[in-house]
Length: 634
Image (cartoon, rainbow, N blue to C red):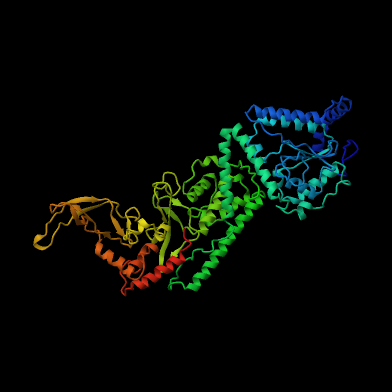
């Protein structure tokens, strides 16, 4: 660097030679640096006693909590090592998970962070080790509950510690450091540089390339059952204090914790595909697919689903090494811009065909919220309270749950007519090559809350976007596992209401056919609205001829009514009962099997009756196969 300027370098470290422009800038500050160096040598040093300062911290912290109406136990943690050490390790609250919750030292090898430092080669034998909070507390509780008034005594103490310690180099560790754990070579180099700058490279035995070659995520000592129970007792004690001191904020904390638990539980459920996965009943133009071919397709589909699950699991673990079931520390992400969420997670979401709408992937916060609402069926409101990273994680989890449980090209809501998420794994009925199984939105809320999009109500079906051309039927759990009350209605497996059938009236104008026969027949012709019409399953659907009250014969008795509109086809109750009885004679209770109208009514694909009719026993066999294949449909 030339003889004009002298720079002090430590530990044999070097820096690049500055350019002439950089040297000019540095030269402007040299007089100030030299004056500062001279003043340090002549400045009278104030005496500072570590023990007294720590006692003052305890006293101020206790007073701060008492001002909030809480008397907290004195679980304070003192720094470890010598304050005269040339190397300091500054930690952010690594002190909660320890074998002895009564311990008062920072350097405790039963803590995962401290154990990791030991494995790397760092300890309080040669380093001054201190914690930002100096209290045995969970990290997320410190970040969430501690106000400026509570943090002030700790900040003042740590500031005095840093002013009076002899360390030349200060290494700062914390969760953010470990989130960068993939930059292993950079972390190893930083630790090596720190020990050299402190002049301790010959005293501290740093393990070469520790993070690059030896570090194993999740490998650290585990607490015994007794130790963990003690830790949980103290956790409950701490939470009681937070609840008393910050009642309103604690409700928000509980909401976050419930979301955390939900995410953990859902994530744990993605480890494998259900063993009774649905057989994809696709068909081939040349005829029905054989059982062997169906098994082959099932295996191929499961391989693809397994790949999706594994890729999502890797993305989550890579971006968050602390996303595990053993820690109850959890700090919710503050990321609200879609472009700021981890790139692997963003790319994974955009690569999934089933998270696209008409082939367009998620590109911003708005489309992410839309995907979340559609997957959650609108059950959660106030999405603005959630971080974008949380929504992204939950969209991934709910999407995998959806495709592994087989919910169903492009779809739209039958209720609000708006497009919904594309179906990456469509299902078709083996006996009906063009018959697509649609999803019907279920809801515990009375009346239903729609497909998940704003303003949508009811329990609509998610039908093909071109449902005028694509034939479809619905398959619901309630169509297979019937309640006793529903079983009592023998017509239920054969009929639907107008609300369930696209293009069919919910109210029909009907006319009384009168009473009696022959010379005793009484003509009536009285008209009324029939508000509960029942339509047969098959297309075109037929109106089940109603029997309604009419006093045309002088008595209020049930009479047959017919539709005023002559274009409406009718099926008599007697003919419908004949079909129902035919299945009963074949030992088939239609209430226990899928609603497949083409099989039940023995029709061709065009809706016409089969030229060579099948027996009820043969039709029953088809229904049994369909039920077995769809056993995992939920």
